[in-house]
Figure: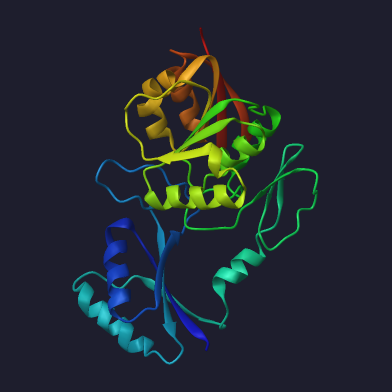
Length: 293
């Protein structure tokens, strides 16, 4: 059965209301995405993280009365004008499967590959991590993750304990273990991410070396390597804790940073670490450092 996709161009103040109205009008699915290619950064406490310009899409069955749906939404908005909208027919297909068909094996550095389960590893002798797209962030397609994977490939943490802070899918913890780490602690505030990490660890036969938990400030045994692919605000706030989590002469890798945040973070972490820019991809920066004795 074909579908109709009703799209609105709007702003954060109206986004949640429009989403609710589309659901109330019978949309089978409602999605939000950036309408202006704007990086999304951490919101203030209690705020909803949204872009300045947002595209909201509602998916309706082909026989839906779109004119009636638009009229209903317009009435509900009252004095607020109906946002600019467009309507597009969509063929009937398995959209998740279609997205996965576009997800190809990727190489990071010399020997590390991320391989979807639908593919055979291009290089059977490489370090191949089996990973499919899921609800948790981290498949290697985003530059922030890719740079961390390249760092791991260039610096295999053989026989080391590692912390993956903001683990998402668990990709960095799993990659570290597949590259020889003795153990990895995967930390995330999203229970779905911890579940995904455990599932992916089982798939990659490293579940016995990966421990998952939500963030807290209880005692952490310092490790030789900590990786945090999160955002600049949390990286700034967590700096004193990260300094406690890393052994003297240990390494730290920070990602999720854009260019105009680099100087601030270099200054913050300079209290404990000798820091440098490791790599840049597009507007994203990855920092690395060694803790002073």
